[in-house]
Length: 312
Image 1 (cartoon, one colour):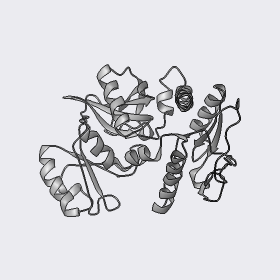
Image 2: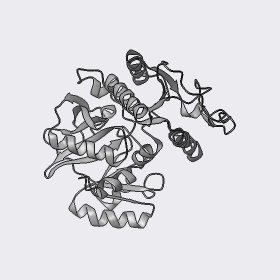
Image 3: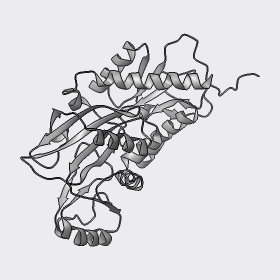
Image 4: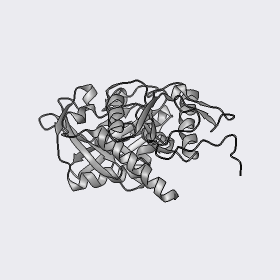
């Protein structure tokens, strides 16, 4: 049977795997991953999703810089910049299209959507019975004020951007007067504040890949925002079995292949604060004796090899 004009060309036997490394810039993470893939016999090609396009008349329906005749063998999404609703929709559409082509995508568009939207992460964690702070999200200003009036009687709440990372834009809400009239960009996303000060604040970041925790750290700060980008200090830590199990379950619940899971140990045990599907690990690397990029690259290539064996 002749090949369809839109069918991607097969990878020549013996060729090294070609991995599209989705990044916004050639930063430290991109360099670490490029070196890690090269050391494992694969070729990583940095790609910005903003430079990709749907092109239904092309060989495989997409235009991806560095991939003309066939799509990449695998994709690793390290970072994806924000933009207009239309631009972000298209970028996620590219990832969805690659998955439809049978390309291994870590993490795929579904997992990214579930994690970028913090309210959906909270919903999925709670539905799965994973311990996480009580959460409310609404567009209604009156509903938000009702929540604050009712819930601050039992303790503080945290106002967070629905889309955001690295601890930016967080605010403690102790009373209705603390609540902005329009929330953040028209949406009010609130979580029960569960931190406690014991000579400062701390929580844990666990890095999950391919179904297990591969690295962990504690983050210490004088204030309640512990993110390393906001001044938190990374400290080597060994996650206990309960925290590891929680982080692995949380990662699977959002459908991610790898993730940075923020865990806080409270009076009733550990709970998941957030799941990041495009985690940075420069702070974690400082307290980890092996190269995290090597583990991540190796896990993706192992999954790619397993996929190839299953197809035979």
